[in-house]
Length: 182
Image (cartoon, rainbow, N blue to C red; front, top):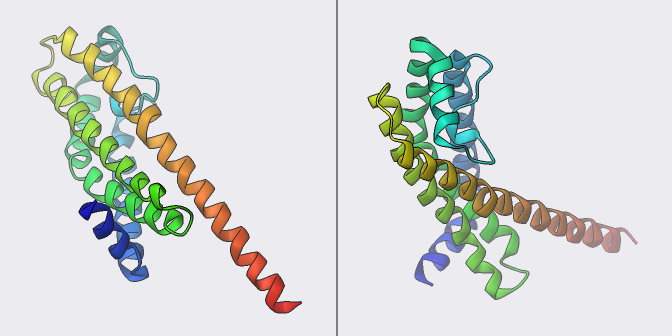
């Protein structure tokens, strides 16, 4: 609970929230730039439905040396990215849901579950990337499962909760303005 209170208190500072938003957007742009060297292929950690080991190795093979090097660049950046998006999303959830209901404050922990899975996924992908062409089929099958769980269990629900909370906050703001003007 102490952690939830910490996130809530930090989330009240709009300047800090804006700084974290800028970091998150900046890293997102940087990751996109690094992934451009992969051509039309998406990095393994952006395969929303996960993947099987044979799909991962087909991708690594199709990328060729230059594409694998670009994937390695995104991998290094992705080690830092969870340190940006998890606190930012947690602060946003705390800010949007704090006035709604007290148990909702636990929602701000959701992004950190996603970040933990992201790091687990990154370790598995790193092993495959940096030891290619050696195969680690069981590890990559596990990585594909972790990738799907990260997206469907944490990332998409976090974004949905931000959207719902933002909608409620906008509705409340517009209602206050309507009452004040009427």
